[in-house]
Image (cartoon, rainbow, N blue to C red; front, top):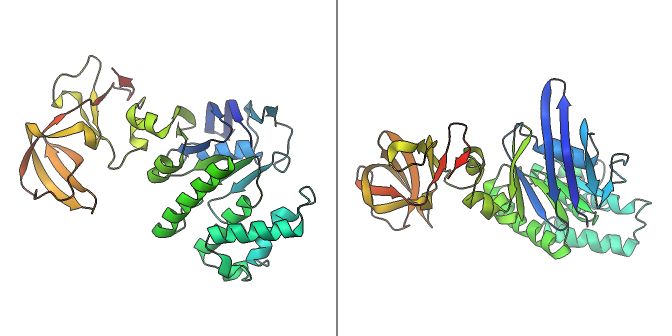
Amino acid sequence: MAEVTLSGISKSYGDQVALDDVTMTIPDGAFVVLLGPTGAGKTTTLRMVSGLDRPDTGTVTIGGRDVASYTPAQRDVAMVFQQYSLYPHFTVRQNLEFPLKSPILQTPQAEIERKVNAVAEVLQISHKLDNKATALSGGEMQRVSIGRALVRDPSLYLMDEPLSSLDAKLRSDLRIELKSIQADSGATMLYVTHDQTEAMTMATHVGVLDEGKLVQFGSPREIYENPVSIYAASRLGQPRINVLPSDVFGGAPNKATHIGLRPEQIFQGEGEDSFVRRVEHLGDQTRLHLSFKSHDLITVTDAHTTLKEGEIIQIRPENPFYFDASGARVS
């Protein structure tokens, strides 16, 4: 496996700045998730590391080697795209075998069969091994794409929203399997997703990107509990953080223009009156949609609450975040 370092990486496509002076170290054996909306620079970062595109400025090192002159094949990375890319005339087995039959790897046939069968079982496609790729559903094709990367044991895995086309149950199952495979193998993984659950449950580190800039890098817990900005705070957490004018409760520090409240930062029981607009029972928890001084809030409460729409409850903040006019965190 390998440590990966991006140093001062910038990339533009015409007038569009895709990455702006991004510096980031992906530790050896880490599972790094990149978060951000469409256009934030997540996929471009993968392309810089893989060698599919080259940066305008800056360097990429893999395992301590500057890979500027390396082709994608020489970088020993495996990439899974958001849209599956298979050889349609091959069977599933042949698609999975293909990377292992490279003359560079010289993998014995018995080892090829062992790896293909093991990966097919993990991805729940063993019964499809002799089917043509064209006979698969979209979700099955994506599982084969993931499998083709997993059989290789490369220095680095690059995954661009690999689970987005799968149904909820399979996505949950494969999230657990991918994390288990990564942890057991010690593989280094750079993974792009819009899914906060994937980031919180799979990542050892999260990189938050905004318009090509890396705004925060740290563990999921660190970014959740200590965000540097409103933008970073909004990338993790469900329900999403509530952002209100800083003076709605009083006691805000100087320069603060907004207060940020995650569900656990809203104390229920004493404080100021809030109107219950809607109650959502979700099984393990209940979400309360509140109206407070003409502002909307979402918080969570006991799964078995008897609260109903139209009731009044009292709330107050506990250890909230404060932000200035630019959205940056203030103490």
